Image 1: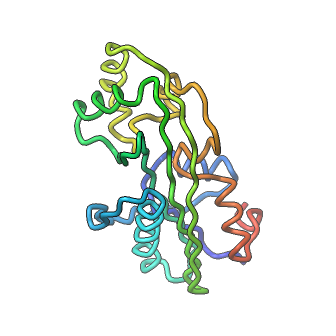
Image 2: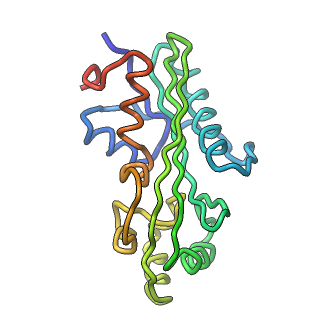
Amino acid sequence: MPPLFVLASASPARKKLLEQAGISPTVCKSGFDESQVQLTDPVELVETLAQRKAELVAQQYPDALVLGCDSVLAIDGEIYGKPETPEDAIARWKTMRGNTGILYTGHALIDAAKAKTVLRCGITTVYFSDIQDRIIKAYVATGEPLNCAGCFAIDGQGGLFVEKLEGCHSNVIGLSLPLFHQMLNELGYSIIDFW
């Protein structure tokens, strides 16, 4: 019998990705204060945040398999999380348009019963369309960019403004399914154990 699978995230996009892959996770938001982690390396940052979130939730589910994730977007070497205001989102999109960003998603999979943790980072290059100011303002007014680390949702209206991806598509949504599959195998599970 496989352990209970818990997603340490309130992200509807991550939950939907898992459901599309045949997994019905128990969802438990960690409530971790991300401002406690101040790192400048994007890989180290997202892996640390994912691990802290998963660890908090694993304390509540001592026999579960817990997945924590965190994403940031780096443009020209600067790391961005979720925009704080619509004005921030508009300014960010003016930097993003016609530019390339690198989306980093940290994944932490904790097998609480075995006291084992696997950490990985998915990296995807995103090519943004060169969109006009009025389109940026209209897109930000939808509210969608304010809920996303990269200031866009590729599985939403933001997908209109992404010309190309290099790397894993689902990583940009917030969870690399191929990476997750590898992590499960590393802990001795098969994806079909959770179907």
